[in-house]
Image 1 (cartoon, rainbow, N blue to C red):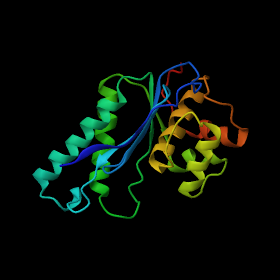
Image 2 (image 1 turned 90 degrees about the horizontal axis):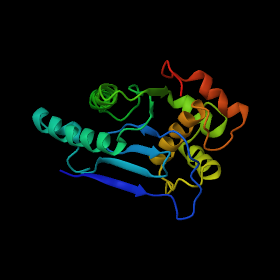
Image 3 (image 1 turned 60 degrees about the horizontal axis):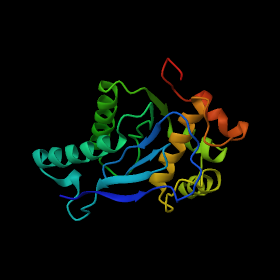
Length: 199
């Protein structure tokens, strides 16, 4: 079993991290959940044994490993003022939709049980906030994050970049943006789903 921090980075020394509410962006995946905090860190957590994928395991063993991923992800999220999650793309190709859905709902359940407010962006809303367009390649989001929020060190990892985008959108919704974005980008804020109470 290998549930690991596949990628972890703090903001570079001296990088300006704007003060404000604590927000964590969450892009769930059994193999590479992207997380980013408004405090300056990025992480990618997941199950990495490609020779023995979770979706091919007997059910009891599968559940054991899925729970390990869940625990690692929710421990890393902590207790922010707001979590922003990308809505599940269960129609995505590649198999494992059943397992991906389980992880998404369990992360949501734990955040809700902890009383953490949650915002939701669809994949298209996330891309819009990062790039100004509702569709695009993963590299476009990575490039957009590197230009607009360079304090967050993603190492070019698209899962980390997705999480940074979600986090930044949450801070923007809380009226404490990490950086100003054009109106075309900020249209994603109006399209997203947010908690009833703001701030």
